[in-house]
Length: 469
Ligand code: FAD
Ligand code: NAD
Image 1 (cartoon, rainbow, N blue to C red):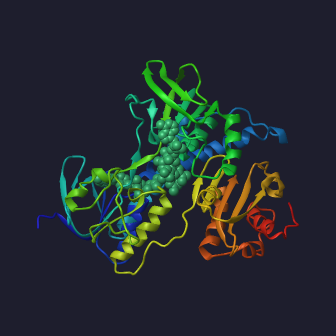
Image 2 (tube, rainbow, N blue to C red; image 1 turned 90 degrees about the vertical axis):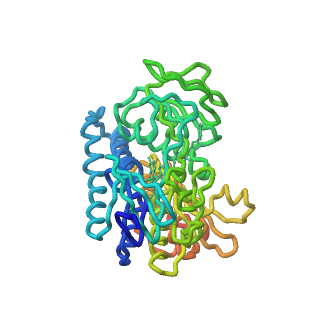
Image 3 (cartoon, helix red, strand yellow; image 1 turned 135 degrees about the horizontal axis):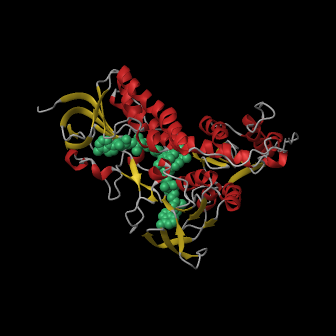
């Protein structure tokens, strides 16, 4: 037909979902075109999400650890922050290395990257419009939609660069004196942690009655306690009722349980109230792909949409909007197209907030067990009894395991504390392998490590614990 390029697999979007799908399909011998509107590959996660946020959180951790060593006899003084160097480290040494690496990997695999914004024109063709207006028509046998999501805007907020989404906050234009974070979810608390360490007075407003509503409250408590100490304020059960941009600041009114009575003035506001899928901006209707009213695309266990040769993966197919979910789904879609008999069968997907302390959870939560009336057993090991936690002066943690009451198998886990995200992996594997408390308690863990707390929690449940510390 009228195609400029043809392929067996067209992947729309080059985030963790898209690049993984494209690379896997190419490795399986398929001819692949990868369509991306931005100049670098990697999507939200590499360019303006997971990776730059973790770089800045590392900086934050270095600063706060240095601040807190005074009581063991060390003091470093106030940090001298060179923002230009910090930004350039994040952009060039971290993000640039990864996105550049992706471009090389695409080339090495023979994946053709077509730059521009894609809009389906039919069930077998997409029109890609480049920045200079040039249109490339890509014909395909199969497609994988991995167009991701974007930040939800605050309804009625004025158009002002001081009212930012996560991308604006990661750009780190300056260190504001006073900043309001709207939304006490993962993005709000991670970015709040960064700005607090850099010296900003941070306030968080959350309309639900607690921070990170999806996690168990016993995990949130140590984080909230620490944030209440460091931040200017944490206002739960509270809403922003008006936002006004004036020359000298953003004026904000609140209502609700913890609302300040007077109008508050902030130098910057971060809006982090969730993300919405990009399903409505890709011409899906021309391909016959069903998109719901919010912009999500429904798929089956093989990641197939209602159109049998068109697949969808990642943030655009629904919660949880996490990079490791997208990459896992990507492999399934590429392998199904290559003729493999596979499905998405992961039993659990871990979640981690890289705050200080970190919060990590997987599988059934206690709150869920309660609301669904599921009988569980649990064991929670307090880090105050861990020699390692004491020796690094970070005892405000806990490792909790949730067991099936009958089989004693691990069906959920929650960890709060430094490095909780790394420690969770053992529990994720335990759940996937059907391990029980014996398996974890009888596995010798190196001493003294924080990973021992997983073993200690299992021993607590078994009643065999003797070696506190
Ligand atoms: P995306 O990464 O959103 O990629 C979609 C790509 O498609 C984009 O590059 C976009 O430009 C392109 N695109 C869209 N429409 C078109 C079109 N019409 N034509 C051409 N190209 C198009 N997740 C974690 O697991 N861990 C974290 O620590 C983490 N931290 C985060 C921090 C922040 C600040 C944010 C915002 C997100 C974070 N996430 C994290 C979430 C993670 O970034 C997403 O879950 C992940 O990027 C989703 O991958 P994806 O492939 O579905 O889509
Ligand atoms: P989120 O859904 O995690 O949190 C949004 C929070 O804002 C919720 O607590 C919600 O109750 C609150 N909220 C909503 N509207 C509000 C309002 N008008 N006023 C006050 N509070 C309001 O969303 P997010 O933090 O924006 O993150 C978006 C997505 O990005 C998440 O789905 C997450 O999966 C992903 N992400 C993951 C990581 C990670 O894995 N470490 C990091 C960042 C982002």
